[in-house]
Amino acid sequence: MLDNYGTKRIIVTGGSGFLGSHLCERLLENGHEVLCVDNFYTGTRGNIEHLLDNHAFELHRHDVTFPLYVEGDEIYNLACPASPIHYQYDPVQTTKTCVVGAINMLGLAKRLKIKVLQASTSEVYGDPTVHPQTEEYWGNVNPIGTRSCYDEGKRCAETLFFDYNRQLGLRIKVARIFNTYGPRMHPNDGRVVSNFIVQALHDKDITIYGDGSQTRAFCYVDDLIDGLVRLMDSRDDFTGPVNLGNPNEFTMRELAELVIELTGTKSRVSYKELPSDDPKQRQPDNSLAKAELDWEPKVELKEGLVKTIAYFEKLLSA
Ligand code: NAD
Ligand code: UDP
Ligand code: UDP
Image (cartoon, rainbow, N blue to C red; front, top):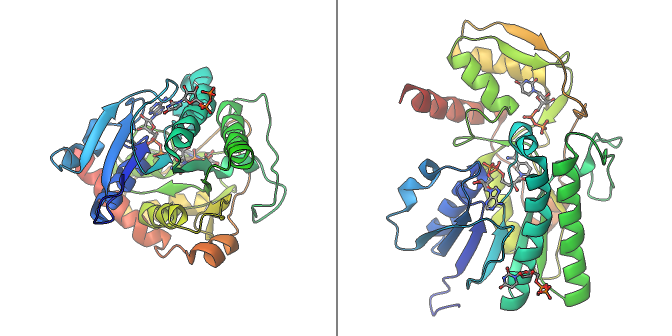
């Protein structure tokens, strides 16, 4: 479907979600046509409303667990609820989306003979015993816990991607995305950055789970999208899996303090029970992404939080 101007028609599943909407925007800015495929399970029309008038943007309401017959030049497969609250709401559907959704998108890529990128996750490492996590680490995942529908679903999707590659020669790209934050996160998705900011803006208690000593490394959305696009555009024999995340690690207590400082809230911190299987630490080793994609995150946590807080201030006052 390449036309004379190098414009591609790019299929983005999960395109009305947090990351997907930013990706659609970036691909349009880069001069491509975008087919956004989403069933609005966790995504919203509001995330992509500003794109609907763009003649290069098309929206298709569809559940990826059903076959999809469309045309295109590349597929970014992002469809899947990503926050623990959302993916645990209907865990059977979560695994179906991960696994059957992957089979359908791989089948589509096979028929069209096009590249397909999988939005995998650092959750494939589970509660890691290797720190920071490199792509060689096989992970420490509970197969029957409350997070398993997502973790094992995403692991199985990776297996399918690599078997379609080995067995059928399909061109695949697998990104292992670490905690990402920014504007258009769902205000009620229970993720730590959105929770803390929304609580702070309402002067409500900031809820730290456990003692707050667990760590995460937070990547600003613009950096992450840059990494995904670079991965899709990388040489054909580079499949990944490749870690995409910001290596600067913070405890949840440090994050709470930063949000309190930046919002100037009257909120106090309160401690709640730690959810089951909650990883104690997580930090990407980004060496592979740097070597293969010349990619490194640029946005510091403070700078990204300021932009995210501004987004939520506007959203909550609307
Ligand atoms: P999100 O929940 O905002 O977006 C997911 C999108 O997929 C939503 O628009 C939702 O409606 C759609 N969707 C869900 N099930 C679907 C189905 N069966 N058919 C069609 N569409 C469906 O989440 P996000 O943070 O934007 O995450 C996007 C992708 O990136 C997910 O695959 C997630 O696993 C992965 N990821 C995200 C993070 C992160 O920190 N945000 C980290 C690791 C991996
Ligand atoms: N598929 C799809 N769109 C296509 C081609 C295939 O959704 O354009 C689905 C199809 O329903 C099938 C899945 O992708 O269940 C896997 O396709 P594949 O060709 O690998 O397997 P097969 O059809 O041989 O089972
Ligand atoms: N967390 C927290 N308070 C909240 C929400 C989350 O302390 O209000 C903790 C959570 O227990 C985990 C970390 O923050 O240790 C990151 O949680 P999130 O759901 O954002 O991502 P994930 O656990 O999937 O990395």
